[in-house]
Amino acid sequence: MPLKHTFSLEPRDLLFLRDARPMAASDAGLGAYWPRPDQLWNAVINAFHRQWPERQEWEGAAHTARADENDKSSFRFGALKTVGPFPFKDGVLYLPCPLDFGMVPVPCAGTDLPSPLTHAFRAKKLGKEHLPVWLSAAAYARYLAQSDPSDPSDLSDPSDLYDVERSIGISINPETGTTGDDEHKLYQAEYLRLRPGAVLAFEASCDITPKGIGGMVDVFARADCPDTLVIGGQQGVARLGTQDAGLRLPQAEITTSCLRWTLIAPAVFNAGWRPDWVAADGRVMLPKAVRAPGVSRAAWKAQAAAAGGFPTARLVAARVGKPLAFSGWDLQDGGPKPTLLAVPAGTCYVFDCDTPDEARALATALAPGRPRSTRFGEKGFGIGICSSLPARSVLS
Image (cartoon, rainbow, N blue to C red):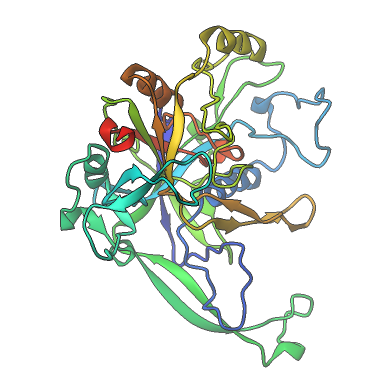
């Protein structure tokens, strides 16, 4: 289920977007990455706090009865959810290229594959092939349908959507505002500049229930909702615009008992590359029941117990990219946040189910509207799209 609002974000100039790797003397700055979901979410909620620095009457009374409340947090706008951002240019949405693009899973016995994997991915064509960074929504739909997605007009390199610019700077002492003793310390930084016509597209919602007032307040629908965001480092400003249609993520019909789940956003799992809801032996531990809005936790647990799970679904293959290291700055504590490693977008997981019906039920549990990252699901982590693979490719 898509979120309520769809926006476009158009940077005023350059954006500086880093990961958590340290900037060494030989680096080029590492600042031209595509914005992560958490960077977008943080930009939105910070814009809310700048627009409304004090609690507003329409927010209702503060929720102070929570035993686990952090006394440094206001817990305002906690209902904020975002999906994205993704490149959008000339009416075309682009998604991260799947890491199994042009590959098929094959049995792989007698190897050192980590448990519970029994299959690896093999390229359909021999030789080393350069994968695009982005796929248009049309090409992604063909990938999901197992048809040929290799139309050159649908494959996009980063240079089609944005440029990487580099510049030289000199270190400044933050206490004095001058170069001071650091006058000989130079650095090189990378910046992201979107091509003309390209924007960042994302979905968002923030519906709050004011305590003591009742009803529902859609924060994004307010007339005084902020129309600019500060995203990334060095105060990169971007103009916020609305889009009439949603992101319209491509979908695929589930027709076989072999289900593939491909991430279009990073995901953080406590087990590293393996989702926490997959047991060490490959069993899928998700409940079949889906928690509807407004249903209490106790009632949902009862529904989940009655509906059962996925007794035959097993993880048999995974194509995982290099981990994405990311961090941030904690405004409450005034220090850096811990560095986390995320499974990158484009990673895919293949599940073997007994029947197509069970595969369809699992696809419902893994739908884009239900983020499956252990952390930061509200920030758009752990969002994937399901598709079918020929059952014989896994069972043979």
